[in-house]
Figure 1: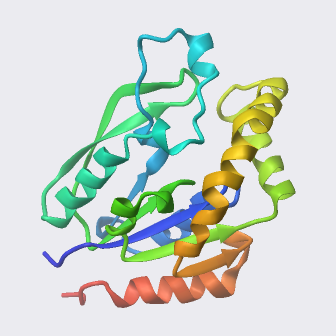
Figure 2 (figure 1 turned 180 degrees about the horizontal axis):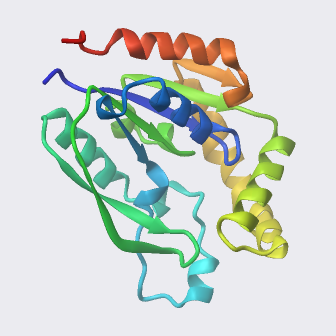
Figure 3 (figure 1 turned 60 degrees about the vertical axis):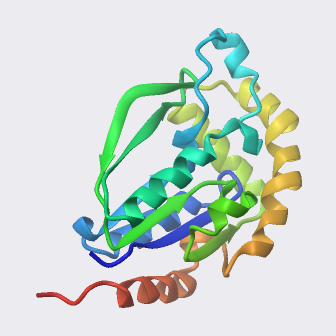
Length: 208
């Protein structure tokens, strides 16, 4: 099998990076693409109770087991299967459920802190940064966390003020200088998405 081509999609929380990653994946036959999410690699801290885990800074690079993601990307590049983690965002714990991921010609990785680690950046063949205004990102995060993760508005507001916004300014925003392509407004930018999809499709093996 040809060595996988790895696309990294980064951007602030609520920027639309997940939508961009999904649209890229949907433009490729499903058996030819794999999607990995960096935030499923959050470190598990079972020694902490729920209240303590809720106060963790999930927006700092040290919150993630990035070395494991790097190892899994290298495993896939060798043409081998990888057993990847999943994360329970309601409990702030790594789930007992794992994913068995097969190597595919295209691998899409998404996460807010993808470009902050030099070793991880070296594994990415194409680096996309989704750049969306802060007010839009915040509204999207509020909706996601309340509807999908069972959070209260008060907890979302406090987390945004204490960790999300400061860490975005410290780590996420500066990391876009490593991007090959910056996509304003994410999934709404059809011109940029069409160009990226065309590039990805050009890398697929010819149909038999």
